[in-house]
Amino acid sequence: MNENTISLEENITATERGSEGPAPAFGAPSVFTVRGLGVHYGGLPALRDVSLDVQPREITAIIGPSGCGKSTLIRCFNRMNDLIPGAEVSGEVLYHGEDIYAAGVDPVTVRRRIGMVFQRPNPFPKSVYDNVAFGARINGYKGDMDELVERSLRRAALWDEVKSKLRKSALALSGGQQQRLCIARAIAVEPDVILMDEPASALDPIATVRIEDLMQELKQEYSIVIVTHNMQQAARVSDRTAFLYTEVDEAAGQRWGILVEFGDTSDIFTRPRDKRTEDYVSGRFG
Image 1 (tube, rainbow, N blue to C red):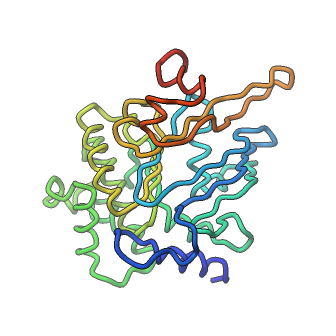
Image 2 (tube, rainbow, N blue to C red):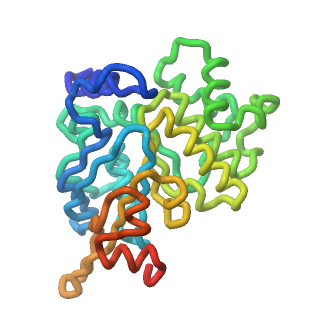
């Protein structure tokens, strides 16, 4: 393991889950510090000059019209864009003061600290138990696996529903249960941050409420970043909101996402500073 990877692991220990503990040693309270972030796919711009800070143990929502780069932005936080051919990332994404795109930083280590839950539930074709234990096994977990699985399922508010089905296929669970199972799977590797890309868009209203309630519980222990097309959901669950918008260069035939406004969710929805934000949250466009 190289020096950068070791530093990445060590620097997050001062702000591990829980409100107690020593002050951050790195001098910056933000979980993520993003400065001048740009993303290109195959040379075409997708995001341009995005700068924002994500605070610990808060829910940060990313909203905006379709195609404005919301998913592109959230994938930058754990280097998932590395997996897309032709993707190029510029600018800085600092995680607890460490540049996660610096030479020598292991993206697998980044993703272990920064988990992700996707739009559609994607449980493995394995048992409920093996789904939760999968990442821990890969990472060489040496503790009590039964205890870890139960603890993770309890944190995901799923234990009581599946404790008698641990050896049955995860694919037999309902959509909402599968999504909470995916959250339990992310929790099991003891991340510092949980990214959620439209986690409730494929769920019914009852399952959506459960996911939203779960996010409120999880933010006591984790920092959460969520992409959502549902403005009411962003207003309900998040502490801070980033509004992205699409700029278009008609002459060049190009379009890219920009950050229009970022701040406390209550301000974004009731006292936006930018007319574009006001028009979007009021439903005038988008």
